[in-house]
Amino acid sequence: MNTPHTAARGLARAAWIGLWLLAFGALCLWAWPRQMERGCWLAEWPFEQGCADYSSGKLETTTPSQQIAHLERNIGDGRAYMWLTANLAAQDDELATPLLPWLRKLVPHDNQALALQANALLRAGDYERAARALALLVERGEAKAREPLVALMLAPETQDAVRAQLTPESRWLDPVLASLSAQVSVDALQPFVTEGWKLGVLRQSTVLGQIDRLKREGYWLDAYSLWVALLGQVHDGLYNPGFDRRASLRGFDWTWPQQRAGKVGVQVSQVSAAPRNGYLLQVEMTGRAALPQALVAQPLVLLGSQFRLTGRYMSDRLRAREGLVWALRCADGGERFAQSEVLEETQKEWRGFTLDFEMPAECQGAARLQLEAAAAWEARAGIAGVMYFDDFELRPRAAESAQ
Image 1 (cartoon, rainbow, N blue to C red):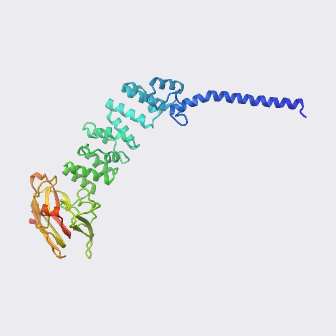
Image 2 (image 1 turned 120 degrees about the horizontal axis):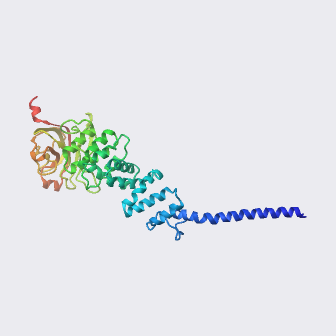
């Protein structure tokens, strides 16, 4: 049985719940448009499809006036300041300049804000701070920062500003050098490579890439200097003359054609020299395809004039009319200026060979030692058989005669 007191308590509870529902409804009516506005401004789900009545900070169609109106209602929105600055910079760099100090305070770690500051520093000629900002962007993975940083590295008047950013903790130099376009000449960047290697911030593969590019561009002495810096110590003459180190096929090491699918004319490998220690070079010619001009090669930087090359070879079932020779050409190409005697069939017996030569002035101290078919026609026809090489030595003849 309901008493008046019980009924009164029920009405009071209903009124209290009603008041809360009204307050909640009023809050929703007030908050929902602002939530919609914020979501549209940030272009976040689920507001991407319902923002016709709201502006977005990420849309190109958003005007500076719309962004300023948003900031008047959201004065602490750091990203909105950054988007406004970017929008103004797209119209006129000078319009964005007054906002840059605010970006350093509000969004100090934002990459786009840092890029805007780097551009302003470049325009102002503050190259050291610009280089610092660009290097930081590269370390953060911003690929677009590499091109302006490389431009500073190439210009003589700004190189020192970039080199000042190199420390043992730097992580920007390796990705910059590893991603250089083919149009960039690496000769001007050699000081960065040398210093970066000394500081331990470059991978060996990156340095080898720079050496190979210097060779392709004809900077043989610079490439060899970097090769010496990479290895720490390099003996004069041939590198790895006994073939006992595994060839890297890079730099100033031994190189040979890489095997490809299908018919190949030659297969080169380093095999055990047993019962002796170490390895020797095996050159197996299949006779099924033409031979490349160089079966095996090594670039050389020789700063003398008279030299003697010696070595040992052995052949097995060699079928050739004019055979093979070790030939010397200028590093940039051209005709042979010296060659060994023809390497013959030895029926698995070791023989020695000697080649005395003089470096031509036109080679400018850089040559290439190559194992070649003696006759071009026979290279095109193909040669069959296996040859082995070991115990090479290259030294100045003047030094030899003085002994």
